[in-house]
Image 1 (cartoon, rainbow, N blue to C red):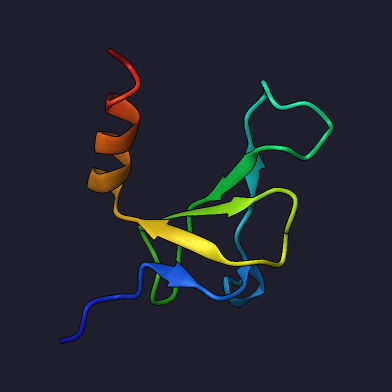
Image 2 (image 1 turned 90 degrees about the vertical axis):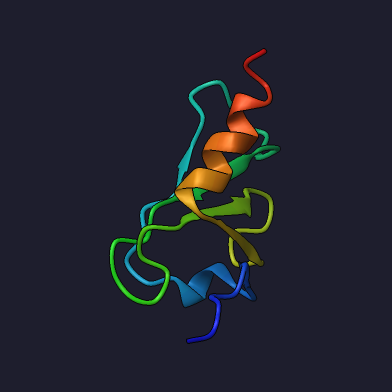
Length: 75
């Protein structure tokens, strides 16, 4: 079994996801958006994209990796 890729070339490759951005974001599109694919090969991964490039590449994180990343900023 091969490892899943850690990125997707275009967010349009993730079908049926709902992209969300922080309520702290302004209308300037200068933040990231996240989504949780519920089905397909990336189900359960956290998808992250640049809000300025809605059809651009997507980074994928396991729940554990994302929790570790965000925990580093809580201190």
